[in-house]
Image 1 (cartoon, rainbow, N blue to C red):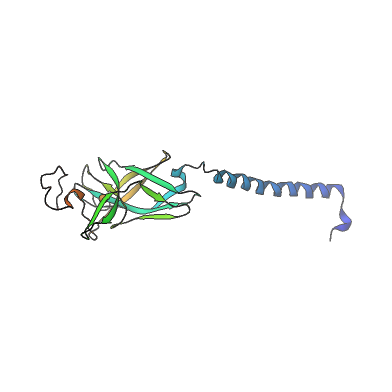
Image 2 (spheres, rainbow, N blue to C red):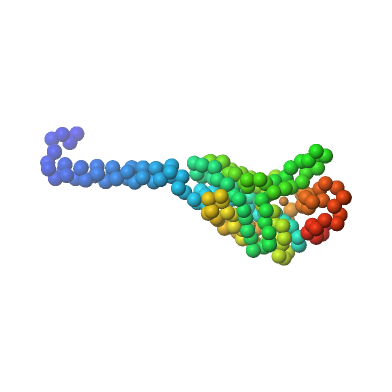
Length: 190
Ligand SMILES: [Cu+2]
């Protein structure tokens, strides 16, 4: 349609537009190629959603939520800390030969698959608060820091909620029977 109007100023304007349009895809390419090198820290690739902590007066509690990995490689959480508990472990729930469910430290930590999710929930994997410094009251919040195997860490807050169902055996040392009545286990009001 503009075949007869190729005056020099018009061509220059067209060229300038073409160069500006080409610059945008170049920038996008640079960003996506950086992602593929896997230099992204795990803490930047993984987010948590729906996180919460079970209300408890003393002793033990647990945190739950959904871990979401937006990156191209699996990520692994190896430890956790919180000002609410002197010690925290990463637990799984297993069923023993007697059919009794008991929790235990999860070897290798929590793995979140590439572009996948790992759900921490009652009756399954959970972040175990082994030694509460004080009561966790319903409606309050506590902070929680997760550390990955690449050394990066992420801190978030989790709301304390009432939860009555799915009571696991939270003193695994007692799961084997009554023979260890005198074992050095944390006091457990229950
Ligand atoms: Cu546990």
